Amino acid sequence: MSTALPHAPVELDAEGFFIHPEQWTRDMAPEIARRNGIAELTPRHWQVIDFMRDTYLTKGAAPSIRTLGRASGVPIKELYQLFPKGPAKLAAKIGGIPKPRGCI
Amino acid sequence: MPDRVVILGGGTGGTLTANRLRRQLGDSAEITVVDRDDRHIYQPGLLFVPFGLADPEEIVRCRQAQLHDGIEFRLAEVERVDTAANAVHLDDGTALPYDVLVVASGARLLPEETKGLTGPSVGESVFDFYTLAGAVQLRRALRSLRRGRLVVNMVDLPIKCPVAPLEFCFLADWYLRERDLRDDVEIVYVTPLDAAFTKPLAARRLASLLEVKQIEVETEFAAAEVDGDGGQLVSWDDRAIDFDLLVSVPLHGGAAFVDRSPGLGDEIGFVEADRSTLQARAAPNVFAIGDAADAPTSKAGSVTHFEGDTVVANICRYLAGDPLEPTFDGHTNCFVETGFHQALLIDFSYDVEPLPGRYPQPRLGPLPLLRESQFNHMAKLAFQWFYWHVLLPGHELPGVGTAFQLAGKDTSAAASERSPA
Image 1 (cartoon, chains in turn cyan, blue):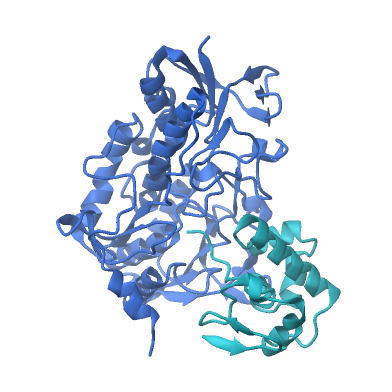
Image 2 (cartoon, rainbow over the protein chains, first blue to last red):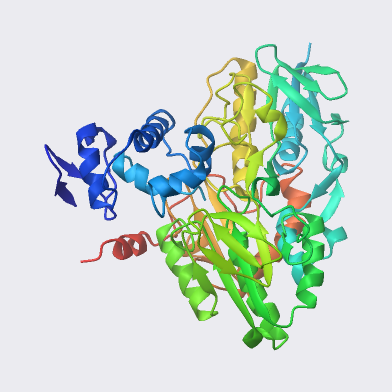
């Protein structure tokens, strides 16, 4: 499916995750966040989003919530306050990377 | 001078790698396997212990006895690996120099990382079946279970054998029905995932099995805390699930020495390795196999077995000065016990999710994929013999190829389910 976000058409999967992370730009993030129930992205949100995206781009896989809690500098409890329900999934969606997969 | 190969871990991966290398390299290599104990557990058997379908002593053997003659076995705890100096430091103060290192130290259970999973309730209302002691305690608890809520939870991935918690639910359903207790015991499967399984087609098949067996499913539940006295499992976003008996699969991490070895592992102690060559990122003469590696596939014996081909061939290439080959394709297969003498089989790779079809021979099978069958159950039981006598000694399993194959699989199944009009 193709959805027009501000500035450029991007390709999203059925659940709204970016298929091509390179189509994402930072200025798209606040709008994706609003559509997913987060009114404003604070620096703490960005800390998580940047960590997600950097990890994905360097390692080819998005980190799990557990790794986020250990390595992003934001504890797990707060991750759930910042990104209700599913921090890893929501931060991935806002940060323009594919849906994190539990490795099975 | 012979090449010195040091293998850390005498489980599935370490043993089969040592035995295959010994056969291929003979006396041109000195092979040393290090482990901190001499008890090799057939881990797939742990699932059966709580239901009285396997006895603890049946599934444990001596590690050293599984190694071919000419392989040295060293009983010691690893302190750390110094990849810059090509040496392993043991806790007795000695250093083992190596030309090639294989990290095969598996995964470690970390119940202490979840509040309440190591408290006094353990063995009372809170159990695990990933350790022999836990499985035996759980067997007693199930025997005296008459009514209430049985909750099965995995705290988070990765875990060894990710289908095991589901299998536990299916077997518990069977066990309680056999005893006429199923109407008095609720079974609830609580998962951090958003579905019964990660791969879409298999998730749907497994979800329908859970429904048929009246097993309640609670998804996207990230367990933060266990309150054993209050009988509650609490999530990070403050949801609570009541239990009378909790079967928990704790968090997993890599071996502790990986954390103490700079550059070797990721944040949770799994060795960072190329997913296709299995060469560690830390150094060209270090390889990882099995649960110890961070390869994005299941932590499962089948994966370890298939990885064995790649690791052994690449070690030989490395020693000969030849370029490595990226041959591991993520091939995984898992038998999923579903109770009542039935099992389902799934076969997949990095690129292809589990599909219906037949295995290992296209069309002929005899094992049907993604479908319950008594054949699959029998194959799962028979596998224990093959494990000790074929897989660990490093022989080929009859008819089972290392590479994932698409032949015999129904590729239209995924496509048709994936594209709703």
